[in-house]
Amino acid sequence: MELEIVDLHASVEGRQILKGVNLKVREGEIHSLMGPNGSGKSTLAAVIMGHPKYTVDSGDILLDGESIVDMSPDERARRGLFLAFQYPVEISGVTLANFLRRAYINLKYGGDGEKAKDKVSVAEFQKLLREKIEMLKLDPSIGRRYLNEGFSGGEKKRCEVLQMAILSPRIAVLDETDSGLDIDGVKIVAEGVRTISRQSGMGALVITHYLRILNYLKPDVVHIMYGGRVVETGGYELAQLLEEKGYSVIEQKYGASTG
Image 1 (cartoon, rainbow, N blue to C red):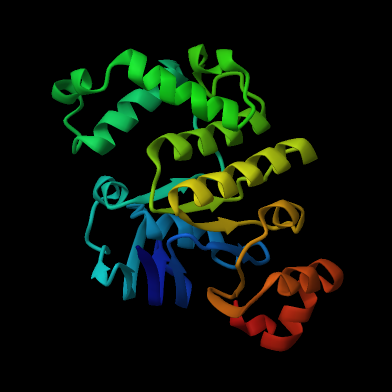
Image 2 (tube, rainbow, N blue to C red; image 1 turned 90 degrees about the horizontal axis):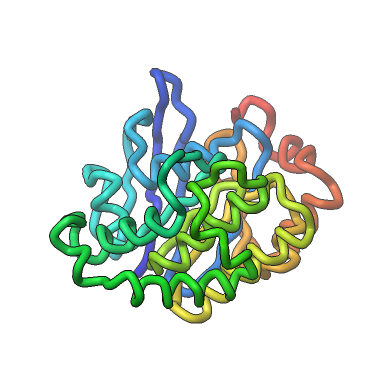
């Protein structure tokens, strides 16, 4: 599978945020997207998944050459896209295990969860869940807790990666998954993403401010976003340049008027 963003322009509440984004992520590749606050990174993630708050003004989002701009978020997910949000939500009264099982059934059986739930036994799903929890080095009891309720920031982010491992998408977009994590959490999440990618061939677009997750993630490609566009694409050395020089080097090159 290949995710391709073609000259994408998008707005929120009448204000254009994305101003001609071009990007391509193939299955099995890990890409990092970096950029200063306000550059459009999180907007791009939301637009890729079809968040109704955003309007696509022009350009296209293609999965294997097919436009998904008019597809619902659910349909995009069934086509193999996954988005881990910057701020995971809490859902009281719903255990993590039940939430993940329902999401897994809905994805596998076209959303007809009530009729399809008998096709995935509780025992079968619990076995899958245990394998993924062990892979991410989570406390085995976490599945019995209510979704994200009372979780630390690190636990919330690890649970999003756990959800990704369960759903096994073709392309995943992770929006600041390293935010709020200590160094051990960053390492576990990065290694989890790499493991899923190696095992399933998943492609990933990892949005981050920081070099530290990239030290463990080892991305194939690094993109720099500024002023609503991807202005630089290169290897890991591009991220190292930003770590050394800061985003001022990008601002000097492309000018404050870009944003």
